[in-house]
Length: 392
Image 1 (cartoon, helix red, strand yellow):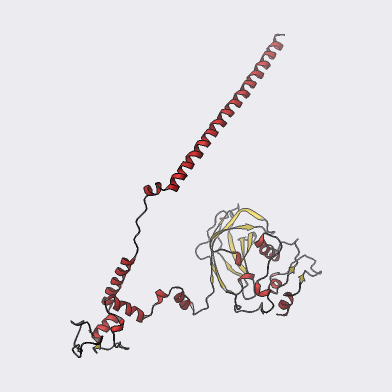
Image 2 (cartoon, one colour):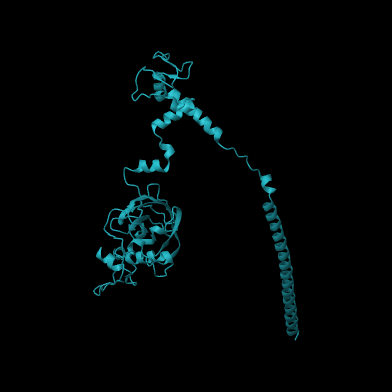
């Protein structure tokens, strides 16, 4: 907490200790989480720390500068890098990565597998946990199957998180790797080109993946989020009953009393007219529209036959309301002014290209004829000189 507050108003530089005689590196992610501006590494050692550093700063074209997130720059915001809950104003994310296949990973028949790691805050860091199965004897185009789906359920701070894709041989030798910032990823199917251990681009090896990025939803609130995103799919039972009644021509305002429990044959009065003529012995809608028996209410709420009729009539009403569009034919499109204009432009360009090609062909034929004549003349001179020398 204190070093974060310090780095909001001061510059700090971190560098390897002098007793690192093997030129090893420390993990820079820890100091990036603390808001340190300059994190120096030993560039002569292409290890994991250097790969994270180069992958992170590759996001803006390797210009050497990245802007820290806003909450790490504003003095009134407090940031704890060891927090496990999302910050105010920062939306946690859920990342799902599916490794589908690899292309041109190796020119030898070796087994390969892929590891997917995430580095960020301590609560976001996941290492050596997600790994595909080994595809034996196929380094050209291995397919890792449908089980290679890795879900990072809760990413508290996506702005500081990075994903690392690493492809290994079955012996543990690194084939290629790639480090990508999470906030720079785009959802969908992606071909990820790989880099060497020193972060130099490999010409052919790629990974074919599917990336899915969504907002993090806490456990137990999925139904609520689905209801908010699509309210019509989560109508209450009472609203469904009202729709069924409306499809039968009964207005909900006419119902004076609705039974709270599914009773047997108690009659319920509808509307204001009609005295006591609608007794409990009624088993259907009577001649007057002002009465409705309890058995009818139970049938409306529980009978599958009535529900089917109501849903079918609702579907018919929805079909009536659907707009109808006349299909557009090809002949109609061909009469469009823009289409005619493009056709004329294409014909004009084709004519210009044909004239240019004919001109080039004539020029080339003339040049070839001149070259052929020169060769014939030189050959004739050499032949005559050879004859003269032989005759002498």
